[in-house]
Amino acid sequence: MKPDLLLVGGTTPRTLSALEERFTVHRTTEIADMDAFLAEKGDAILGVATNGHDGLAPEVMARLPNLEIISCYGVGYDAIDAKAAAARGIVVTHTPDVLNADVANTAIMLLLAVSRRLLRDDAFLRAGKWTGFGGAPLTDSIEGRKVGILGLGRIGETIAHKLSVFNCEIAYHTRTRRDTPYRYYDRLVDLARDVDYLIVITPGGAATRKLVNREVIEALGPNGTLINIARGSVVDEKELVAALLDGRLGAAGLDVFEDEPHVPQALLPLDNVILLPHVGSATVETRRAMGDLTVENLVRYFTDGTVTSPVPECAAIAKTG
Image 1 (tube, rainbow, N blue to C red):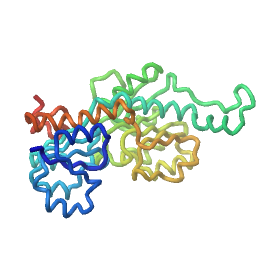
Image 2: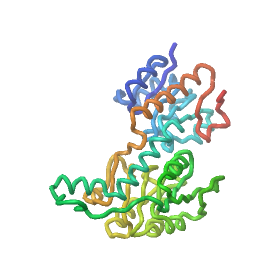
Image 3: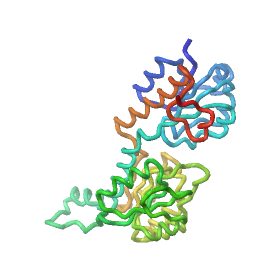
Image 4: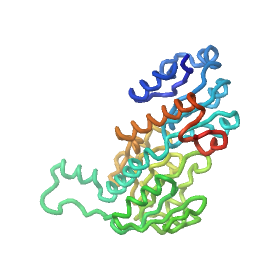
C-alpha cells in the first residue's frame, strides 16, 4: 500500500510523477470541498508535500491526526508552523543549498539591472531615442561599492562571494555575529546608513516582519538601492513605495512583495525600480533539484525513517542517517 500524501498547491510534472510513483497523491487543486475531504480522508494522510508560499494552514494540519512529515519545496517555510509540527512529532523538511547559486545570481542581476538602469535604457533604444554614442543618460557602476547584506546565511554568503569579483566592500547584519571576514553591524539602521546597496536575504516570519522599516529605508537614502530577494514581509512595503515616490530612496530591485501576486501599482511606472515575479530560484536546473530533494525527503522518511534536510525546529526529532 502506498502512503497517502496531500499535495498542497502545484508542482512540476517531474515532481508529480515521482510522487505518484511512491505515494497515493491527493492534490488540493483537485479537491472541491476541503472540509469534506478532511472529514473523509484526514486520518489517512501520513505526509504532506507543499511549497514555501502555500505552506500548510494550521487548521488543516490540526485535522491530519496521523501526519508524520511535511516536505517543503523551497528554502523558506514561514507558511508552516514548524514549532507546532515538531511538538506533535511531525518532521518538517525544506530544500536548502540546492538553490543558493541561482537565488544569489538573481540578487546580483537585480543589483546590476537597477544600477545600470537596464530597462530604462532598453526602452530608450526601442523608442528610437538613440542618436549617437552616449545618447542615454549615464548610470552607476557597482565596482568597488559598499554592499550590505541583511541575513548572512547560506545564500547571503554566496552573494557575498559572487560580489567579490566586483571588488565590493561587504558588510552584514544578522542576529548573531558570524565567523567571517566581512564587517558586522549589530544595528541594521547603521548598516543601511553606511552602504550603497542593501540586499535583503533573511528568512520571513514574525521575527523579521517589517524589519526594513522607514528608519532603515531613510538611512539607505536617496543615493541608496534596496534589493529584496527574501520575503515581501521583511520590508515595510508602504514605506518603501512612499520613499521611492518621494525620492527618499534612490532605487530598488524587488523579487518579492507583501501580498503576492499583487504588486503596488505605484511602482509600475518607475524606471528606477526592477520588478520580478518571485523568480529567484526559477531556473530549470534549480527547480529540478528542489523537486528532487522534496521527493527525496519523503521517500527516505517512509523507507527508513530518515530525512536529508530537516528545518532547524525539527532537528531534535529528525533522523538524518
